[in-house]
Length: 607
Image 1: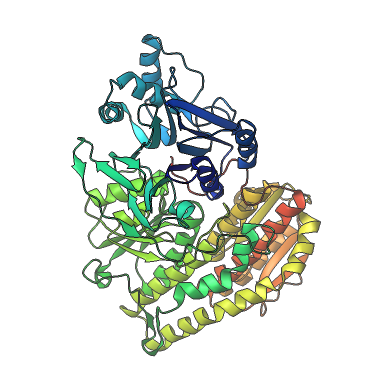
Image 2 (image 1 turned 45 degrees about the horizontal axis):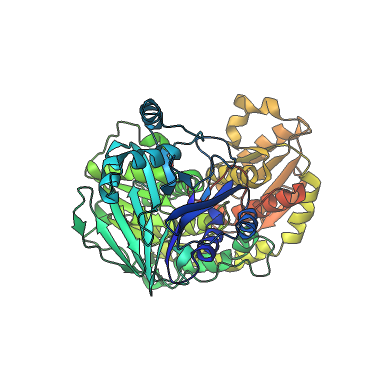
């Protein structure tokens, strides 16, 4: 969640880390800070709010450093204020550190340190680590770190500077992502390689409990026993290029409008039209035996879980394989039953979602085969999984996921097609699905061309504080996703619900102040959904219908947004684009912060 950035090299460290933090803003944060070494002393500066506020304070204080670490903090322990902001220092200000993750035994360690006379300034678990390392330091930083790490419980990524090591940054990762970038006469430490891709393409990922000692243009690595180890670097993919907003007001809007291209990228080069199937060059038959799959377990959180939920309908409908869809944060605490022939599919845009990573590792320990669906090469999940299918969506900066969701559904549709063709599906039916996939980019563009209509609708409905999103079959998980978008960036209480369940309680909430967004684009259940909408109408609820061109819903809808006709299996994509635009324009009308909504982070790397 928090964004860590460190720099040691010949350029101005202060300028470099501030630039790096700006490229990590998308992760979500409430405060930011910087620390480093100069003339054998630790100096620091931290502020609540945006990086621009920190930048002004850094400039006003004329801060100059020889090496620097910095962080954007997303509050977990302690309110967002200057005292709780990172970096944190020890009592004698001999070291400073930044931290991503959660120290589970911080209270126990805090009490033990207080008994030794340590005075704490903040409410954070991070300050505990600073004092703990200082307490263990007897002139050898590596030994101090080893002892401190052995005392910590939880997930953490740390970057540390010490006044006795004026040209080195120490970094530690344990069940939290941290990547080292090696450039020419400069070294970077960051939560995300996107933040330094302009300067370094050679990257090294820290594994659990490994320590890195970074100096200018090089880095030494040690395992948990402090034995020096060799680690191979990887080349960053060239795709990390355009992360500017271009002419769009927000990254979120830009990424919504990128979907014709991102959807095309998701299936480009993966369709075998002649055979009515698909192929993923990333999948090696020796790694995964798709023909032998008897059951599928899908693990994900948030938007990725919604995509997995859509996929469960597809896979069971077309491939006739039973599918279990689980929220990772719940599943990881189940005593999971892993039957023979089970394929685990782990979905994560970032590849760093802590709960999904933990669930994957638990299942791997039980002998499961794991297929990851991810957008970020080199991420933790891609390294843990047996095989990975990449979304090819390009960087997604807006906290509210848009193009990643539609790309996930496309990739999962391709996987469904492969599984179905291996079993009961004929070539002609497979070719029909391929044609529907090929039509999607142009159809999405047709939806985007309705932006003005959706914006005018948003102006009318932005005043309401409660919404229902209703759908059946494929439209039920799509309703969950649509409601989530509105919650995330408009701060409106929106509930996605299976339309048939409304009469079992929730319909009591329907009145003239609670609009319903009706997701109609599922042909099999359309007439049943219409009956449910009549029940809403009878209770004075206004209805915004998202329906295909061929569907007759004008008699029940107060507002109607048309989408092109497609097959039920892909209908969630076109409907979701409408829901994304509706959420965006309502958020804009209400004046909320769209790209970095309050309390949220892009990459959820803590439980």
